[in-house]
Amino acid sequence: MAARLPSWAWVTGLTVAATAAVVALGVQADHGPRPTAATARPAASAHAGGHASRTPKAPAAPALPDQSGTGRRIVYSLGEKRVWLVDATGRASRTFTVWPGTVGPQPGRYSITLRTQSLRGSDGVQVEHVMYFTKASGVNIAFSNALDGSSPPPAKGQKLGGIRLHKDDGTALWSFGDKGTPVAVVS
Image (tube, rainbow, N blue to C red; front, top):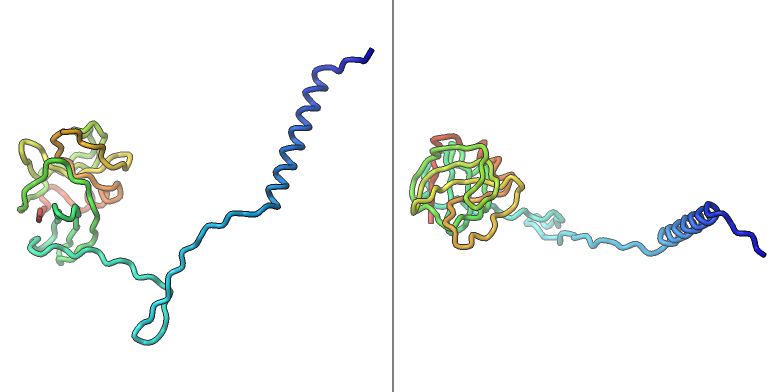
């Protein structure tokens, strides 16, 4: 009759076999083909001097809308869904796209009337850097960004006046605009 092996011997043997198999697969994988990521290379372009350049040009920022006023201000374009932060010299220091709410302001001149560090928006999303500047159809209109950086959820028939920004843009707008900062809304 054959002698039975103790259970610890079976467990030890199986563990050694499994470890050897994993090591063998790892060595085999290490010697196999490696995937490579495609790298984008900028196309050469000729300049007036006849020299080729491999540096792509950054796309130009959209121009500040005409008739948006003068001096230091926030400019919001309804049609472009874009905001510009304009310094005292009239130069846009930053521009970015936004997600408008379902209720928007009329074109005109406003100013920041209230700033709130954070709150729950009327769509239920926790927002920060809330900057109110007008009211339309009984709805407060304000710039804000979601705390988690997400875009706003679908409105589902709600009347929402929040103009949502990307998180970094919300921080920049909060730093730029104090109570009383002019806001120019253009078509």
